[in-house]
Length: 219
Image 1: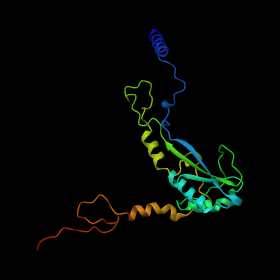
Image 2: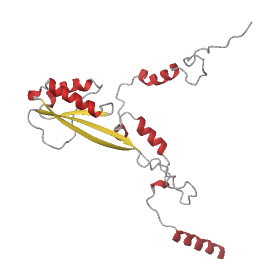
Image 3: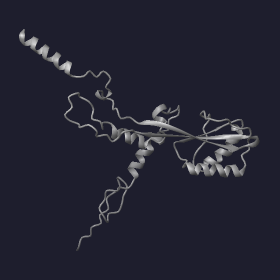
Image 4: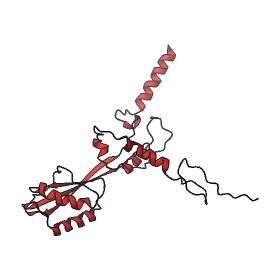
């Protein structure tokens, strides 16, 4: 009985000296270091009297797209009274960059003047703030916490390789039509891609092709 009482008192004393940490996500299995998606909207008003965008305005819009470094992952919207009519001309300019005009438009500040259309480029970026993080030694750790750098590698790679960072938030529906050839394209490219880890003088060959013997033997 005395031994049990001593163990209980010792445990109580240890609990009293250890600070209570009710909200500690670092004690779970989910990594604390997760991608953070940020969005920035750029807006430009172009003259579109009656819904027609003059050539000079299209050239000015093209220069604006070029200055922004427009690319995949950006979303283009057209807003205003003549958005429907001006969208065709704006879409032709955006098509030079392999982009399309998306329906709808985010809310932007300022009034759209009559006879103009507002072009909005919505840009999202995914980053993992604070990574890499080695601010705390990995051991000893009596609180059984994750290491501060846990999850940085996986999350940073995910943020870097995702084509559209908005997919990390909303996801993307596969649709009702499934194309098996699209799913098998990556596997086919992997099989047909030439090897890179070859010795100097050995011809690059596709995977599965017979090996070429470059050595010559004397008679």
